[in-house]
Length: 527
Image 1 (tube, one colour):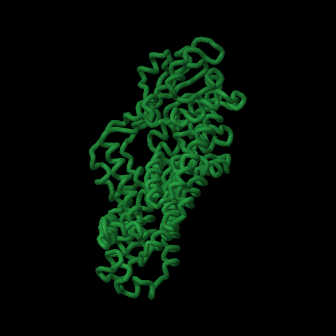
Image 2 (image 1 turned 180 degrees about the horizontal axis):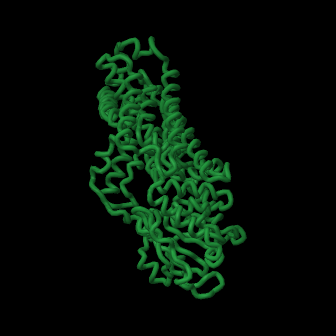
Image 3 (image 1 turned 90 degrees about the vertical axis):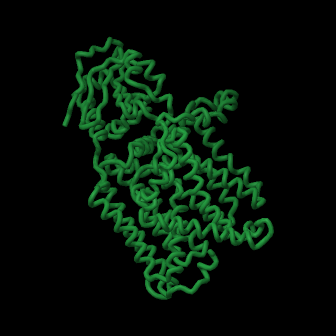
C-alpha cells in the first residue's frame, strides 16, 4: 500500500506543484513553534517538573564539580549540553532562559532531521512529519525545559537518519552514547545490535561498549582523583563504577498503575487531532512491509528493500518503548512512575508514523491544503484548551514557593548560617533558589542514608514528604521518623499553601556545641 501512496496521482497542491514549497512550509512551522516556545520560556517562572530544577543545578555547578559530568542520574550528555548556557549569567533566572533556548535549538534540529528522514522514506509531503512533531503538546512544553528527553530524541533520530543512509558506523557510534542521555538508550542499543547482525555488519558491535566503558572509567576517576596513583586498585574497580552507581531501583518506590496508563494518555503525547493519523500511518507501514514480504519466499525481500526495513524500524521503536514502559509501570519495576514524558524520548518516530498516516489520508481522500490543515490541527486545539484550563506559561507552584521561602529564611539569619553552614535538603527548589550545589564540600550535603545516619555537626536539614519519601533510588526514601531516629533536632516547619517541609538541626553545631532547639524557630505558615 505504501508504494501506492507515493505513485498515486494526487491534487497539485499536495504534490507541491502549487502553493508553498516544502521548505517554506517547514520554515513557517518552525518559526511559529519557536516564537511560542520563547514566549513560554520567558514567561514561565516555574518548571515543567522538579527534575528540571535538578538538571539545571547539576549543569550550573558542573564547571566547579566535575563529578556532575559523570553523574548517572544527571546524565552526561544532558549535563554537557546545558553546562555552558547554565553558566552564562550570574543571575540564575537569566541562565535558566539560556538553557531553555538551548533546548529549543535541539528541538528545531529534531524537526529538521525528522523532515529529512520522512523525505528519505518517500513521503509526498515530508514537512507534515516535522509538523506532526512540533504539534506534539508534550514536545512543545519540553522545548523550553531542562530535561533529558529532547537531547535523547535528537540522538535517536540522528541514528535513524544514519541507518537510513546505511552509515552503520555512525549508527553504532550514536546509539552507543544514548544511555548517557537516558536509560532507554540501552533499548536502542539492543535494536541497533540486532540490525547490525541482520546487515552482516557485526564488526561494528565492537564500538558499542566503548562509550559506556569510558563513562565508567571517568566516573571512577572523578570520584577518587588519586585513583591513578593507585593503579592496581583503580584497574580493579573502574569497570564496575557504572553498575555500582546506577540509581534506578528494580522495585519501584512509586508503586504501580494500570496497564493502559500510557495508552489512554496518547492524545496528550501526540495531540488529539494527530493521534488518528498515527494509527493510520502504523497500518500503512505494516501493510507496506507485509506486501514486500509476500513478493518473495519466506519474506526475504523485506530485508533487501531498505525503505521497507526503515519503515519497520520507525514503527518498532516507538511501539517497543510504549510496550516496555507500560509493562514497567504495570509491574512496578525499574523506578517507573508512569511519566508520559518517557515516550517523548522517541518523539520524531511517533511523528514520522503520523506523517505517513497524514500523507496517506490526504492522497486517499484527495483533500486540499494539507499543510494548512495540519498547521491548524497543531495550533488550534492546544491554544483553545489552554484558554479554558491554563497550563502554560508555568507559574511557581506551592512547592516552589515553599523551597524559596525556606532558603530565604535560612540565608537571612547570619548566626544560623555560621552555626550550621552546611545544608541538606530534599526539596529540589531549595538548591535552585539558593544557587548552591548539594555536593558542595563547604555548603552542601547530599541526601543519603549515610549522611542522615551520621548527622554531621553544623548541618541543617530540610525534609519534605514528597521528595523525602519518593525517589527513583529506593535507598533515598526515608521518612521523618527515620530522620528523627538518628538524632536530628526538630525546630519547626515551613508551610506554603499545600506544601510543607520540616526543619532539623544536627545534634551539634559546627563548633561541637549541642544544638539548642529553642534558639531558632522555622517560620511555620507563610502566605
